[in-house]
Length: 495
Image (cartoon, rainbow, N blue to C red; front, side, top):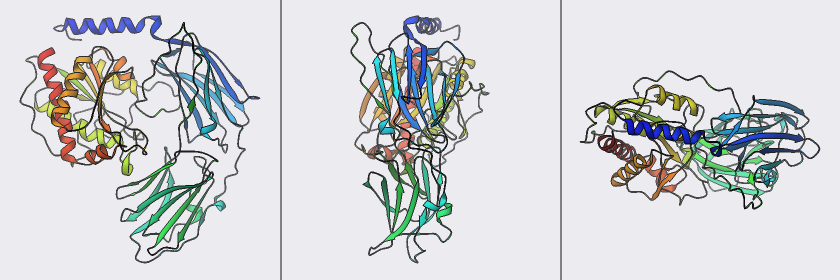
């Protein structure tokens, strides 16, 4: 930190010393995969609270252990049969990651995967019996429909994405209904829709995300109605589909994995893990630290310019890092109507940067275009720039079945408490939305930055009210102005 701010520097040093204490992190100790029982057993030297989910392409169970370090090299052990390999590595400075990858062609039901704590230090990941290798075949897909003149929407094709499927359409946005008609079938019904002439069974995905077959056919109705049936793993839950404005339909498979209750242990308290800030990925070698990006070029030009707040920066210029969450192949959370977190936060973050620059601050964006950047490089950008403040901008999410959940949340770890309070209240003065409070969390970008740092969850992309607001350029501008005004207010009084 800069010489003229010894107190802030001291806080950063103390925070760093506290993080280095042994009580702050458990160590990963042992592991064993039992192919007869189809389960992974592992242990740590202190209590942990895993997070787990099912990911696809390739199909794998990912288990994260927040607050845990791996005191050895990354492990990559071939298994054989339905399980191709087990990988264990240090996902970031505070998280050990375990990955159980299935062999190509095998599927499992995420509802039958259980992560169970034998003790707070000993855990079991129990997989269900393998469902057998499915032979890839496009012949199971059927398009039993011909184009109908006058339909408002045309289904052009279906493609597999990193998160699920995207049904590409042309014409008007369809009136979509999603129904679970049996244990193994999910039906999407599109009113006033037909198929494009080029759509055939061979052009549909085969054996992805556990979907073994697609059937597209018309149903008898007063207006042309198209029914798309997905054959899915038995008893799988929470298949979601939503219309993406002007381009198609996003279809997302279930991802949740049950975490069984841990037996009570009076001598050891369980660490509470915050919700993941970004979707996990497979264990990879640490990425190279990127060069600090240039000044911002707005990715969403619909947001109008906002006059800078009247309060300026201190006489000694400050350096502020603005961190738009996600980007590139990582869209972040997907919300109502296919709303993508990365698009929302990019528009807001670039506007915040412009306001701060107009007020005389030196602003660095961790990304100034639509690219994927891992968590640690974002931290290193701020550290290399000797930044005074770090503000990460995200959008929240919950299930699409909970449109009633809306509102603002702001997170800090240690020295960012007052910064979080000031920004949070500044936003609420300009934007009318539910106040979900200022909270403490161990997000990677907050724990590992030495300057005051906060993470602003600007609303829920899955919330009915917040999603409408996110699509309103004027509302996004008010949100950006609230964030920028809070940053400038804090800088004037504290730096």
